[in-house]
Length: 175
Length: 256
Image 1: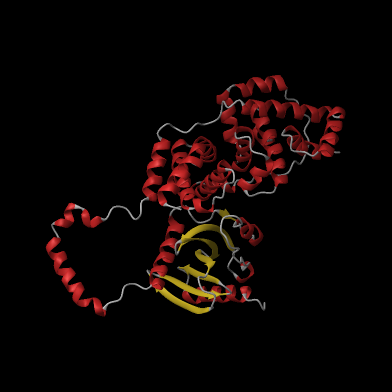
Image 2: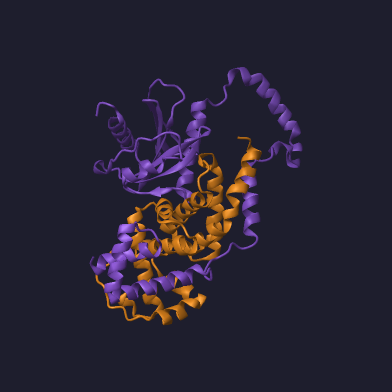
């Protein structure tokens, strides 16, 4: 592939997914400057490996690279966050006292909703972002996050449950 | 169906990811169980709230230009030739002298061999992987996770061996670029030292014995076997890297 053609084709197929790349990086790093750096680095890597991209979904392909770039960075710069234990299993079923109407009201306030999502462990945050913000299927999420589809489902279930508890202002130790 | 299972499946039901049988099962359960139907309703509200896009972060307006610039920069072959810059013009005389000296000496000198260039590339790649957040695209100590990850990313299947019991746990794998082609890089660890093992199909089919070299304090071992070229590089003690190389070779030999 001619270098010029390659650049043009890259800009045509991969560059349009910039918002998705930034959104994911912003949610994973929780910081706008780091997110910009991650996105730039991910794009350079994507460009380097563009010859391995064979007409699959460009957005999913790019986000896999963004996600890996962010995780490497998180391991090196936010190791304490990565070692926080997060609980994959649903252990007990609490009686649910939250009220859907109140919850709808809380989640309509985007500042409160953002703050709540920020509080989730990164493994939960990423599945919510990929599913509810990006609209990927479980299979696509499994490919991007390198986990089985069953885990995608259980993490989403746990993530939404925790999000709900944060929004309803239940004490932290109960999460 | 118990409530514990149901609460996981509620996610799949909400996202229309369940098959028909499962969907009917969960619908039945939701009809019977007040607690779970409450969970379902709440999760539905949440998911809807998130989907409105109110918490979506759009890229800042100048980011696209910044990326376009850096990609185009990366696409340029080896940047602008430095000998065209002005500071070099002033050095024209010494350069001419050097050129004459070179012309005289050329018959006695040889340029760096391909092997030497590749050694340089391998060491640079190793150093870069340690400093630029580039260590692993797929961080995993499980060979059965790392190996399939390369599917569709390279046109060969790199042998990934598990050497954890021999003191070299796997850290992960990543794509790299060496010898003008995408290659598989496997990362192993010995104590605090990291080892990069680069693998790609060799250009000729004959096996080549193990050669080693030391450059900038890094030890490099390379060999070709069964159509694959291997380069191992690390700052670990030479004897330990040699042990690693032997383990890789034994595990990959067809008789083992």
